[in-house]
Image (cartoon, rainbow, N blue to C red; front, side, top):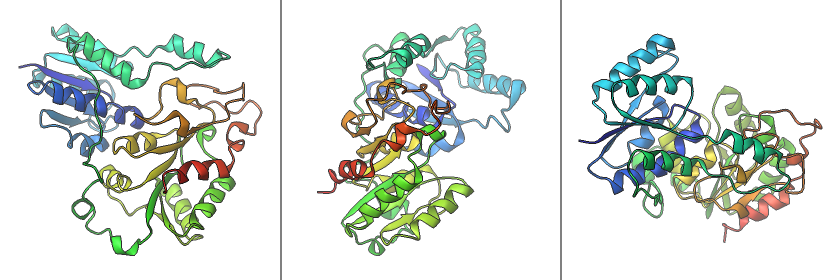
Amino acid sequence: MTHIIVLRFSAMGDVLMTVPVIDSLARQYPDVRITVVSRPWAKPIFEQLPKNVKFVGVDLHGEYAGYKGLNLIGRRLLALQPSHIADLHDVLRTKWLRLRLNLAGLHVEHINKDRRARKTFIEAPVKEQQRTAIEKYVEVFHRLGFTDLHVDFRSLYPEGGADLSAILPHFDLSARPERYWVGIAPFAAHQGKVYPRAQLEEVLRQLDSRGDTRLFLFGAGKAENEDLDALAARYTHVESMAGKLQGINEELALISHCKAMLTMDSSNMHLASLAAVPVVSIWGATHPLGGFLGYRQSMEDALQCADLTCRPCSIYGHKPCLFGDYRCMTGIAPERVVAQIEKYLR
């Protein structure tokens, strides 16, 4: 039997972007076994895919740390008797694993990250759409021989969203009578990807003043949780979900009932895409044409200062601002953000 092992350990958003591809592959090739190998946090997501998809979680800082851990992973993957290996990560860990698995006679293919094209994109005065991460993932499976694969994923949930009574039985819907729900994820890994605090608060103030919209704040980590709790305490219709949800499955279930989601260029953008929720995303140091816009998300909803020649600073947004003021973010007016969200509140 054909058995594909898929390797993608991080980052969170990149792992989430494999879901539309793997779901489509599993449905279009129902006789093929697929085993996804990734970080343990992703298990609840992949468990929602077709039955021919299995998940193996690997803790790269625990049992599978270091060189010995990689060899252990390799032995355990071989024990699963795969026929094909799809390396969707292409980092030192997966390069070592695919070398070992290739020597065992397996058909191994890996992602082409188009590093040269990325550099050209950063420097080009006129930005053109780059190949998306999803397109690169599909290419790997095409090279493995699954040439009929096309991505037709819609959502992890039926129309109307997840069954909250089953996934979040402790979530009291009656306590949230507002007509519309909007998710807001204000954090990102780098400062150049985070909307300034004062402007974010103005967005919250304007949306809160509508009176018919519940705003759910999402974040992780102790510092972020305290920050979100303090923010929510200032507004009537704003609620922090920090510490109230157990795992990514519960977060995604709640997001699936939102009319829209406001995010940075972050993993929450990709999470909302898995529930077919429209995302208004804010782009500062990075660029939505760089290949990482959320699956089936609209370029119209990707807010940016398009006339700044200094951006994008990089593909990942990790470089400090050349001018020190992050004008790529401060130049996006709160009124513009609110207006884009309100398109979905009608």
